[in-house]
Amino acid sequence: MKTNLRYTPITDRSIVRHPVWDRLDAELRESIQVVSKVLPFRTNRYVVDELIDWQKIPNDPMFQLTFAQKEMLDPEDYRRVRDLLRAGAPKEELEPVVHGIRYGLNPHPAGQLDANVPTLDGRPLSGVQHKYRETVLFFPAQGQTCHAYCTYCFRWAQFVGMSELRFAARATDDLVAYLKAHREVTDVLITGGDPLIMKTEVLRRYVEPLLIPELEHVRNIRIGTKSLAYWPDRFVGDLDADDLLRLFEEVVASGRHLALMGHYSHPVELEPGVARRAVSRARSAGAEIRLQAPVVRHVNDRSDVWSELWSTAVTLGMIPYYFFVERDTGPKRYFEIPLVEAFEIFSDAYRRVSGLCRSVRGPSMSAHPGKARIVGIEQVAGEKVLVLEFLQARDPSWVSRPFFAKFDPHATWLDDLEPAFGESFFFRPD
Ligand SMILES: *Cc1c(COP(=O)(O)O)cnc(C)c1O
Ligand code: SF4
Image (cartoon, rainbow, N blue to C red; front, side, top):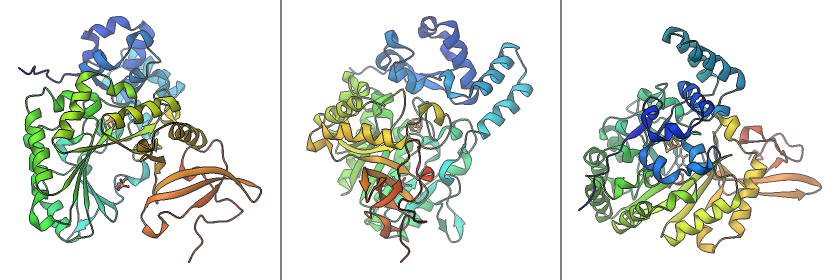
């Protein structure tokens, strides 16, 4: 008999009724209330009961990953919101302040709202992005939330209602029409949020239309998901978990590759038995699971965390994929790591693991021109430089061509870097 552990989100409102509230001191309680007025806060019973080590708060990585932290806001902003809350200020007074702070946090990094939106008969397709020739991103409307929110989330703005509607698609008709006309597309990546927040019957409505013979050039269906880590019962004990696996089997039976792009931030997420059962059940339904996550301060800023994550994942039959640099948005200052340090964490972990783990690529920045990765830090002709390359680029001819940036120990993003050797460009114009 399967238990039906029902998913229960824990929000800034409901947490006061949860037993963990008693474990938090007054200052932590207040900071959760203050910060979650500005940035989205959601966790759930599984994360709280199975993943967070309450002996280790506030430093516990999973606590840092899903609980609002005081330092996520600038001290000045924090004080303004806190004082309004303490004074019991009415909504009309609080809202403009909150709104102003949110606008100062770069809610739409890398032109996420307007860039890369393709057109069909001259009309923009909502919920679709096409940036790299072979891969189309698809954002189903009901999949634009998650079982818990990562504190560093780059899509935080949509969770507070700043962009949701312009992003999401309600049906696949337009996507299918677009794909029929674009035979260069081999991959559709269904993403969010987390598409596996949807009931299987809803997800099915988005996936099945992609399996028709007219779309045989679409060979790989990817689903970006954090459910494997935040709500593994989605694959095990939920009422429609078996149905989800049947859908996976259907995709595979259509002759396509099904890739779950599993967002795993820390090896703790792979420890519970249910998390491992989720992996083995998804895999036995024919899905491959690839791992990806950004490196962030307070959560996974140590190389042993990554070497353990990749090694455990490979043992469980998963494939390490991307090691990202966190994007330039939201509470970035609290979570950011200089590129040079990100490279050290990555390369130190990479050197210590089996070749089977070295399918991972990084540190990678999803920036406007493409996904740029740091390849090394070297002394070239007397100048210390960062060596980079594009793993993906708007201009495919840039992929796999090393380029060089001036060494900068403080840079945290591609835009902070300048060409090395006194040049004014990264790529010599043809
Ligand atoms: C990362 C990414 C992809 C997928 O790139 P792969 O290298 O094929 O994994 C597609 N579109 C966008 C916008 C991306 O950021
Ligand atoms: S799983 Fe992804 S989209 Fe969801 S909160 Fe975390 S980073 Fe954001």
